Length: 425
Image (cartoon, rainbow, N blue to C red):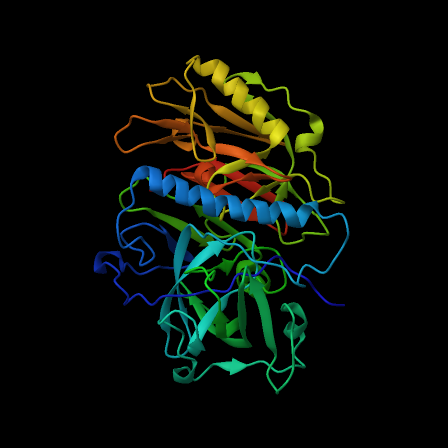
C-alpha cells in the first residue's frame, strides 16, 4: 500500500562555516541538542539587515499565515485524495538544531518541525539550490536508493527513469527534484546509520524558501520512525523565548531524562493526517472565566481533520474564527481599554500600557496557563502591545510562541503529550 505522509519540506542546509559566531559552537552531548531561534546570533539565517519591530512582525505574520492556510486547506478537504499529489509545501521554520551528515561528518543546521516527516538536503551540483550544499562525493557512507527500495513508495511523485529513485514536487510556482538517498546522520553523540533523506538535484522558480526541516512527525520517513530502536519514538523540546539574547533551548531525544513531574493529555489519531500531533482541546479560560465557545469550533473530527494540533513550525497560535472571536472579546473585556488598534493580522493591539489576564488552554487531563510573556508582543520602544493570536480557517494550531519556556514531551508509544513550565533560555 502506498504511504502518504505530511507535506515534506526540502532542507536547504547551511554549513556552520557560513558566518556562525564561534561562541555558539558548543558541542551537543548525549541525546541532547541545543535549539537556536532562527534569528539568534548563532544562526546564519538571521536577516543581513536588522528589521524594525513592525517589519519583523508583519513578515513573520505573512509567513505564518501561509503555513496556517496550507495546514487548514489540507485538513478541510472533504474528498480523500493522495496528499503527495500536486500539493504545495509551505514552511517558515523558527528553531534550528545542529546535525552531522556523512563520513567524515559535514556539520549542518536543520530546522526542526513536528508537523513534517522527512529531511531534504541540497546536494553538490544542485541547479538553483543554495551555494552551500551537502558534498555527497566526499562521504564514504553515502548511497542513492534504487527504485525497488520500500522508501521509494513514500516520497512524492517517484519516478524511475534510471536506477535511482527520483522524486519531484511543487512549491508555489517552483519545482524541486532530487534522488532518495541514505547516509549516516549524527545528532549530538548518537549516530543513526542509513538515514533516508532527499538529495536535491534541481530547484526552479523564485518561491524556494531559504531553509527547511528535520521532520519530527509520526510518518514513515520521520526521525521517530527511522530511529525507533534508539529513541523509542519519544522526544521533548524546550523552546527559548525570542526575547532571550542567546536564544538557546534544547531538543531531548529518547525517554531518558524526560521530566517525571508533568501532566499529559492523550494524542488523538487522525487517519487522514497521521503525522500531525492532534490533542483534545476542551475549553479556554481567560483569567478565571471559561469562555463560551461553540463546541464544534474545538471538536476533533477525524473525517474532516478539524480539531487542534501542537506545532513547532507555526509562530503564533491560531484558533478557528468562532473560538478566536470569543477568546479575543473576553480578553478585551478584561483589559478594559477602549482604544483597540490593529497591526497586520493582529486585531487586538494597544498603544497604552495594559494589565493583561492569563489565558488557559484546557485539554483532557491537562491545563496549560500562559502568562503575559507567551501572550503579548511588545514593540522595541514598548509603545505597542498586541495579543499574539489570530484566527484560522479550519484548524486550531497551538504554536511555538505559546510553547516558549515550556518543556513539551511527545510520548508516541503511550500516545500522549505533556507540558510543564521550564526556563529554557
